[in-house]
Length: 193
Image 1: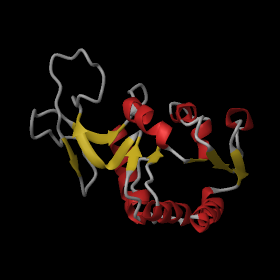
Image 2: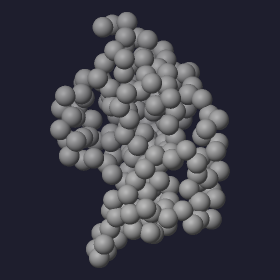
Image 3: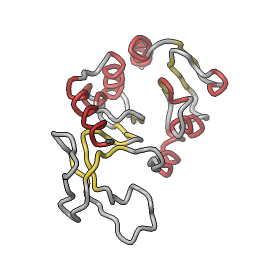
């Protein structure tokens, strides 16, 4: 059932195009050192030209072994390291070329851990000049935890149609969609530099 669901998402993603928000982030990454951390499993940021994207919940255009080391249980007797880019959705019966187990999309499923890259976040946070959060990131964990990593950044923005104001103290909150508001914000940031 999960494979069918993600097969449909894979096909839908192929038809999707990057919007104005994705292109704004790409413009920002052309001018500055930008790391885009996303909960999305699509590749619209990459399609827009964003250079460095961290996918917290994995990517729909990759597959991995069902015994991949990223998936609990961590006490398994053996774990596989197979992961590969795909051009067709993963189907039941697609087997890992390394160990023979079922393949699955490289997507975090409920109950699985998310790689928050805590060590990397701790290393880069003191160097960040501007932090921009978008959408449900202030309300959906574990991504909402990113706000604490960047709480001391001197310039912080958050764009959301319905911002969770309690979680956004110290932020310049911009109410609206990312497609409408992010291009304006990026233009202002680029014009200052």
